[in-house]
Structures are given as C-alpha cells and as structure tokens.
Amino acid sequence: VQLQASGGGLVQPGGSLRLSCAVSGTIFSINDMGWYRQVPGKQRELVASINSKHNVYYTDSVKDRFTISRDNARRAVYLQMTNLKPEDTAVYYCHVMIRTHQLLSDNHFWGQGTLVTVSS
Image (cartoon, rainbow, N blue to C red; front, side, top):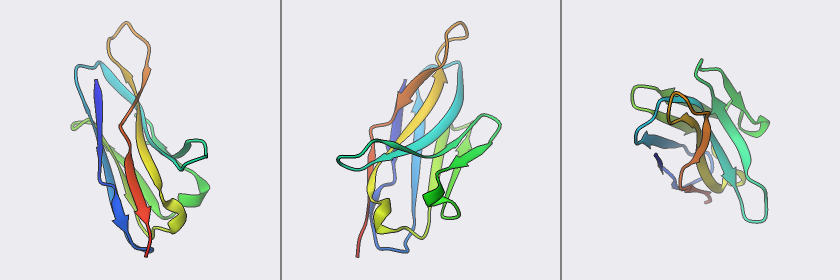
C-alpha cells in the first residue's frame, strides 16, 4: 500500500492550492483520511480529517479557509486551501487509516509529504 501526495508549491499570501493524495495497492477498506502539517522544530499537527461518513474536522486556524474532501471511487483525499497565510507554510502529509484485509485491524499509512510555502 502506498500513498502518493501532490499539489504543494510556492504561493503568495491570499492564494490557493489544492493538495491531493491517492491510495494504491491492495486494500480491504479505507476509513479516516486526513492531512497533517509540520514545520521544523514543531510537532506534526492535524489540519483536517474526514471519516467514511464524510464527517469533517478542521483545526481552528484553517476553518473557513480549507476544505477537505474525499473520493472513495478514486481512493483519494483532497485539501483545498484558500486565502493562504505565511503561517500555513509547512510540509503537508496525508494520513489514511486502511484495513488491508477483512480480518485485520486498521493501520496508519502516511504519504511522503508535500511542501507548501506561502511567501511574497
């Protein structure tokens, strides 16, 4: 099982980016999907998550600016980021809870990280 994240880059303050993360490999089911971010010297923080019922969570600092969504048919999760601020600069990681076999429990899987830089 692999997670492939994409969509990071350099953007000016107030700009937008869309992150994507796709799951490949043989799996039984996908449950919670989410995005974390990390800056040097700080702990990785949860930015947004979406469960199998499409219930969503956002950390306070991104509410009304970021939107998380998922496409179960494509086994993908997205993060639409608008009105980006310099403090959003970080490496963003997708995180997915995957059950690889019917008889196994869910496991944590992480994408490789994609850098988002917000700067003028």
